[in-house]
Length: 414
Image (cartoon, rainbow, N blue to C red; front, side, top):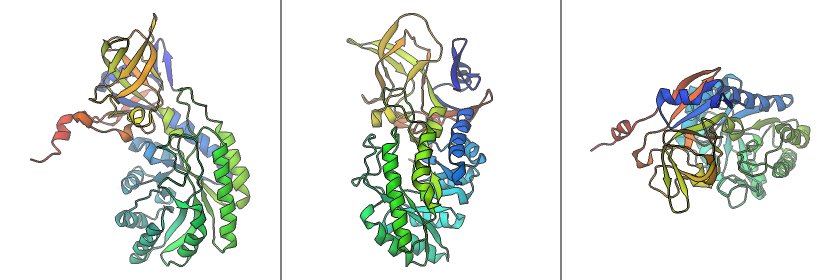
């Protein structure tokens, strides 16, 4: 584990977090290069026999240094916007390892992706199919596609991150699959090559995955019988992670890969898997400084300088992250609410958690924040855009500098 205590202080890959805080101030994200390498390597190892394409979900963490590190190790990219596609390309990830997902691709985004020669469009609706065909025809190109099929499977996750139920906006209903593949086969700008499914994020049980994989396999056999050349199966995101919040822990990655291999292996297709959280989540923390310790009526507030604009997950999803001090302290443990400076009651990171008696100026770490952390940050209350650091072999460097309020204000025009 890269984030460990040494001599009573938390380090990241050998670098003390308090020293990193002294270089550029707080709050800041800190990423461990060793964990990123280890987690990507685990996916590549477990899926190596299948010749799978491991596409990192850029929406989880789009920092250029993160993408460049993963791309340099052979990862592809799963992107959901033209901006993410440009980030992946700029980071050196080849277009032939990029899958373009998302429900609202524009003609401009499609044209750019076609010009780059990406591996696959995951088409999510009939209108998108027709627009993609039109854009491809105009450029004398052929778009390689898979339809994202919605299998109406409840993944058992938070309602805001489940994507495979019939009421969700993603994908095409299973009962329309045969018709849309038949429609696509008759379009000159389209080449069907696969099927895609993605049932949600932060899954910690194998049963929903296995159910989705079996739906995928059955559909592949049906479509092949109908004359379609199905050679790619995109199985969506990877496993969830352990947020140490009392929720069930995810199974071993080897079991997830084994289920995919058992169900889908006989089809002889190339597998595309799109992990994001399970590669980057544990690789990052948010480091923040205590501003005030405030005693309210029956509750102690630990007010820190990170806010919901820096880490939105607790406010948006009710997510819980483990919070620990950078410097280990002896003495009594006190229940407290950890809150930020934003003028919203929802700017709360934790309620009633037990921490040692911290004081103004002390540093705390919000763990497992490497995914859906900095990418969702903003500047509400005209607060600086949070900085990002990466540590590799004991050396810390800035991978996104803080954007101060003066620079934000300068974007406005009177």
